Structure formats: C-alpha cells, structure tokens
Amino acid sequence: MRVRIEHETHYVYEAPIRSLIQILRMTPRSHDGQHVRSWRIEPSIDGRVRRDEDALGNIVHHFSADRGAEELTLRVVGEIETSDTAGLVKGAVTRAPDAYFLRDTELTEADEALRAFASDVTGDIKGDTLAGLHRLMNAINARVLFDTEPTHVATTAREAFAMSTGVCQDLTHIFIACARSLDIPARYVSGYFFRADGVVEQDAGHAWAEVRIPELGWVAFDPTNGICTTEAHVRVAIGLDYLGAAPIRGSRWGGGGERMDVRLSVENADRAAPEQ
Image (cartoon, rainbow, N blue to C red; front, side, top):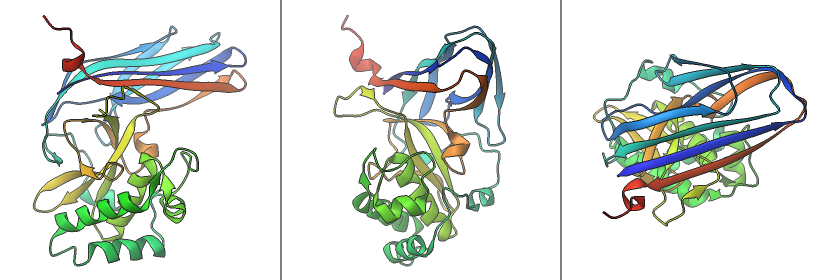
C-alpha cells in the first residue's frame, strides 16, 4: 500500500514569542515492510532545522526560531510504501539492548491490579509467549473502551486501566505495563494508521506496542484495534512510553498562552490517484 500522510500542528500565541525550540520525532525510517518514498518537514516561519538521531535510533529534528512569531504551523507530508509483515519488525534501527525495554516509567508502571490481570489472561505465557500476548491484546481491547474524553497525555496505565477507558496511547501503556510485569521487553511506538472504513481526516496519530519474543524477535501489537500491525500501520518512533516517542516536544520563551490545533489526513495514495 502507498500511504500518503499530511500532518499539521498549528500554534497561536497570545503575544509574539521571544524564541522557541521544538523537538520533532515525526520522520519515519525505512525497514522491512516500510519504504519511505518521500518525506519533508515544512515550518511556517523562518528558523533553523537540524537533523539528528536520539539514543534509540529515532530520527529527530530540532527546529528553533527567534522572536516575533505569533503563529507557527509545523507540517509534515510524505508517502510511505508498506507491506504486511504479520507484525514482525525486521530491519528497524535498534540501538538499546532488549533489557532496556523492561524499565518501568511513571506512565507504564504496573500496580497489583495490572499484574494480576496480565497473569490471569496470559496463563503459562512461557509455554507459548506469542499466544499469551495475543490473549493479552484481545483482553485489553475487550476491557478498555476507546474514549477521547476521560484521559490526557499524563494519564498512567494504572489510571486508564482502573477507568477501563482511554485512547490508543492509554491502551498501549496498559499493554506495555502488563508485558513488562511478565518480564517481557516492551516498547511504545508512535506512528500513523490508515483506516479501512474510508475515514481520511483523523484527530491524532496512532500508537501501539512492540514486544521482544525470543524465537521471533520484535513483534508489534495494536491493542486499540485488536490486531498485530499490518500494511495500514506507518511506524515513526519508539520509546519507553509516550513521552519518549511523542511527535512534538519543546519549549518557548514569551508568547503568553497558546492554542493548538491538529489536522491529519492518512489516505491510500493508490486509491486517491486519478485513473489514467
């Protein structure tokens, strides 16, 4: 599938800024099942863009600008050619050892309720890790209602599980917390998802998890949709949790309050192309 993505994040400030810096993890890499055909970042104001990589191998752009701006739009646009690998993640850049992804964070630390849930639904997971993780994914998908209202970016896996509601970020944190409680390395993935129901305009990007299974390597599970990743998924960045893979993080000086709006479209470029 040829997936076309246009993602705009628009900021309006109460007063002109003195300076700002934004850290962008918004550029995907090619690997098995994913080939980046084209990709570019387009800030709406003059500034400096520096490309780098973080410790996990994510492509990171640092955008900085000086005083005067009252609005800023960060736009990324590109096309990715994808194919279905049945959730297997091969050829992706990985800089950290597997054990690094056993580390708990505030967003993914499991409590007794999560540990008990993970143990109950997976059973003897060491006998068949893949099957156990499929049971875990399906149980989370069935238990946690997708709802954009109750949670926010700082909601923990424990809180979302107790409420039995959340967005893709929350279901992913719950899955990661459960996997790590079973001594299985797990990492957070940010990216995009093509919806087969014809909805092109979306409110936000997508998130899922990857876990390290000894006999298979890294395998990607999407608890929000109850599936392993397919050609509909575009992988962008990884982290221990949302904060480590967030598309945009940064700071600014001046400007007062701000308003942020997001516009995102994810479409099948093959279907969108006009017939010859």
